[in-house]
Image (cartoon, rainbow, N blue to C red; front, top):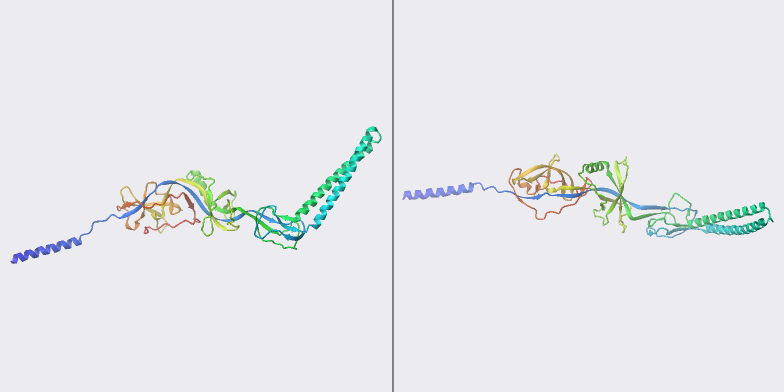
Length: 399
């Protein structure tokens, strides 16, 4: 009986020790799951977003060309005017009288010319028969020429008087939007005065003047010279308004200045932008995204796959051929939407880990899955510190 109880106790103790051993045993290691993006080479249009100011396409300051009193203002301030449209009417009574006097003088000169022509014709016939001397014939012909010259001078006086009379009605030299009037009815204006009566600005199209630093210009030229970037001509220029919205009408780069502004160290570039709705007004601050070249076989990596250490060095975690995580030093230059443009360290076919970074370390095996909704390729790049889409790279602790 005692032996039987001892055997039962030993069995119970053995079972209890076995259970405790199972609880203390370490579970098998789990392979961390990560999401990786496979890099592909693709052409990318490199762009530069630069600040700029709008300027009118044409500007005309309206000034009088004759003296006079403003009799009537013929336009509405702030409205649209057409080229040749009358803007002011000056008191033209004096100029009209001068015009009529010049016309009368012309009629008198033409009458004298007609008399001289008849005399010259009659004397020429008599000279042919010897009835008058050759001297008298020459004098008659000279008087006719003097009469013809008097008619020409009278015609010029009429033309001058007509011009002065027309100047009494001041017209717009260009089509555009006119500002406020600097004078009112009854004001005395003088010919070629310094102060303008009003200003007309043509706003469709409109200019956007931007400045690019010589450092960026030299960098671009070096890239073009080495063949790293191919030049792209006639690319549309995207205009971003001050509130961040994109202007619906793209512009076109018209020219770049041939000299550098010594005060700013930059080169002026001018963009022509359609402005049918007059949404852009002179003096507005805008940003222009200009295409400067095409990078063939560019490598783009999602921003969440790039980490930056306290010293500013960038790196990425990639999945190597053995299925293990590997840390690799990477050189990036600029953001393109939500991705970085890679300059070195990565190539097409590399699998960059973009999710699950906090669960791994270099050298551990990983279970890789592709992202469900991979973002489509971005075809345009915006460079520089002025770019609004530049986003800081995440740290290594972020997924």
